[in-house]
Length: 264
Image (cartoon, rainbow, N blue to C red; front, side, top):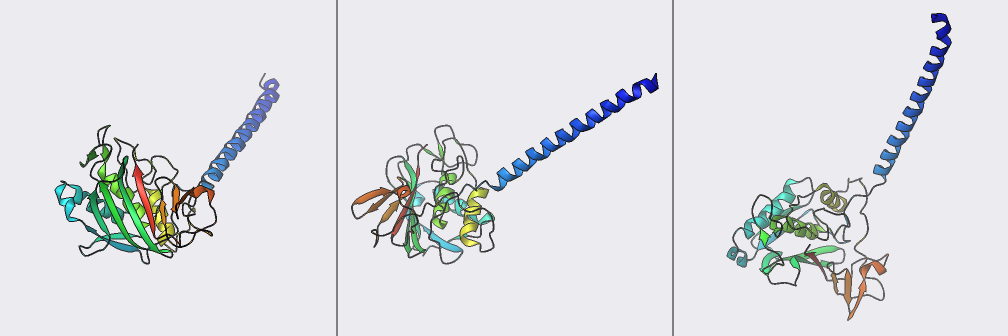
């Protein structure tokens, strides 16, 4: 009987080995696809074309911040969180700095905004404004905001991202996303850090930006003007154009870039 079964067992063995090889081949193919997909995946960051001349800048805090409990401390905490990350760019508090953070009533549906001035391809100054009348109340604690609150620390970290040269990303749920969500907190995430490294680390060899947000001015656009990252529009000599309709250009002609954080 064992002799009679041997050919059958041999066939079963060959069939099993054949199936195993096919399964292994399929598995390797799937793993290869995963590797290829991840290697072609861009990071979730977008940059402007201007940078600071070094890898740091200073900021001062307007005296009106003292009228709002914990706000001044939140500004410092946001800057320090960037400094504590692996970003090559740093922020330093300096009471005599012309770069100012202050409280001010600004446009409806904005929690904060940052206006950056440039000379050529270099930033020269910024003003960060925190809305005195935000569309939803700021949360200033260290826990989780309520569902109707926006986390102040997250908003300020977002604005400091603009300061160093990051634009809004098209990725969702990132620090530099166009809309920060109510009831959530955001850290200085890897995408934001990669964006800062792309701008300020000459040894950076990671993925490039997901898109160029700095397509701001080209002939017939010349001189100075204002680019509004909030509305994705160029206000230039009385006319406004979507930045997405203009390609292959730089922001060298713009004196101010305004970056805002819209309500959820």
